[in-house]
Length: 81
Image (cartoon, rainbow, N blue to C red; front, side, top):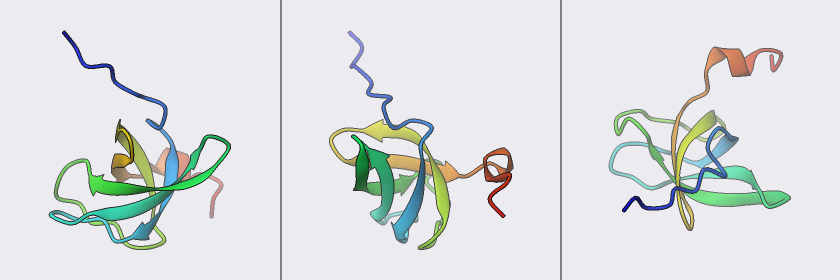
């Protein structure tokens, strides 16, 4: 049997509020249920580092409160500068 996968946060853009890196538990703020919530965060590729203030893309959500993130692609940065 396959475990049910919650994709409700996949593809969301968040802002890093606690440094994310290999071997650490970072934090990211994400839009969630009509508000904004903090989630534990890890680099999806297990090697990247994201600093406070960086925008990241959620690749995978592990309920109840952990996300795996990657660098925000340039195409999603368009118009933000």
